[in-house]
Amino acid sequence: DLRGAIAGDQFHLVFQPIVELASGAIHKAEALIRWQHPTRGLVNPAEFIPITEETGLIVAIGDWVFRQAARDAARWRAVYHPQFQVSVNVSPVQINNENTLSGWFEHLRELGLSGQSIVAEITEGLLMDASPSTARKLLEFRDEGIQVSIDDFGTGYSSLSYLNKFDIDYLKIDQSFVRNLAPASSDLALCEAIIVMAHKLGLKVIAEGVETEAQRGLLAVAGCDYGQGYLFSQPVPAGEFEKLLALKK
Ligand code: C2E
Ligand code: MG
Ligand code: MG
Image 1 (cartoon, protein in one colour):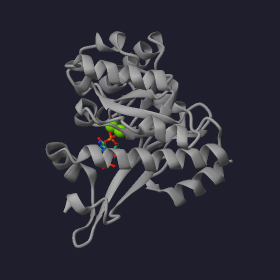
Image 2 (cartoon, rainbow, N blue to C red):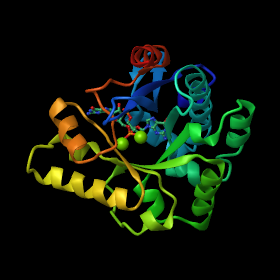
Image 3 (cartoon, rainbow, N blue to C red):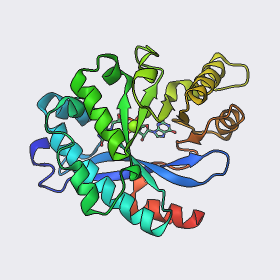
Image 4 (spheres, protein in one colour):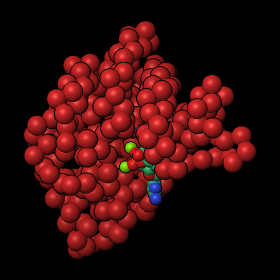
């Protein structure tokens, strides 16, 4: 079914705001894929992304995601904020594939869009056993102005040496650390330590899975730069996301 899903127009993107904690401003969003299956209904990425990675379909689907996300980023840059950025999740299978990125940069140029409008979200695992060609792709991103986020930070092998080796812009603190945040909790100590370390290295920090006002408050006091989660908004289709931006304007 996945093989026909692009041609069948069954994928769409939803967007979740990444909110600047100090000001409440929304100048960033993460694009998340959804599959509207003709008989099964809405299928979440956790169910189908692993299959697309095993089969290699992720390369074509990832290209589709990139193109859609770039198109939306261009519109939101024009209408809402000139520095608006859309994050896309890039799987290790995509980075390790020879054909990935082919056409991405040309596509940005066709849209008249700077690389700064896209952030690539990658995982720690990719950097742990980074081959020379992985390193080269990350350099291509940097040369194009595309920033890089480490997704689900703190859940991988936690070898911190890669933070020095590669050009990283953002750490996304995994939801599992945010879920049980409370004053004097060990999760708060971990978040604070991640934030201090990131700032000393010149990186910005995004907390994932922010669901409560209490979590937002603790993260803001700890100096966390951005928050993302149901407290601010569920991931929503582009049209609804634009309404959210219009409210903020
Ligand atoms: P992720 O990149 O870490 O995305 C964050 C996930 O957390 C999303 O799940 C989002 O809906 C969910 N989330 C956001 N706020 C909250 C919250 O406050 N509480 C809780 N409990 N969850 C929250 P989603 O959309 O189901 O995506 C799951 C994963 O699938 C993503 O994790 C990402 O790894 C992958 N994924 C999604 N879209 C793509 C894509 O276009 N390409 C690739 N390669 N992977 C994708
Ligand atoms: Mg992500
Ligand atoms: Mg994540």
